[in-house]
Image (cartoon, rainbow, N blue to C red):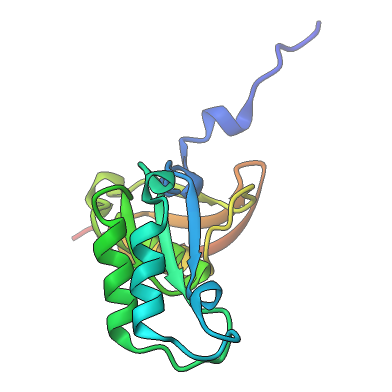
Length: 175
């Protein structure tokens, strides 16, 4: 007789957490101050203010905006502040820094809100493959959040995992 096929992964009780679900939904756009520098080196305040006044800020509507300078120019802090002041009414979020740092901060904030207690005594797989740039720090942060609660933490896919943490079993002695 043919035995029915059993999906052992589905029956295993593993819970998969996909960090891509924490990825920001809004488009990420960049404001490079380099484009507003004289010879890509010097910020002239009067010219910079005039350019920002004429800039189309509507293009950042509901988007995440990164402000940075891609050259080694010395940019005064107030220049970033001025861009932020103009962009804030339009952008979903305004961030000073590079794309990698932005994603680290966003994932850190999302994981800070994550309730590890929901996974008390559960066997958890943190999904490994992603199509989006999930920073390695997010995996570290999530592991720290889950470790006090989870029975086990694994990395990868439910059919092929790398063990990360397993809570020792407590053996009760009979008296």
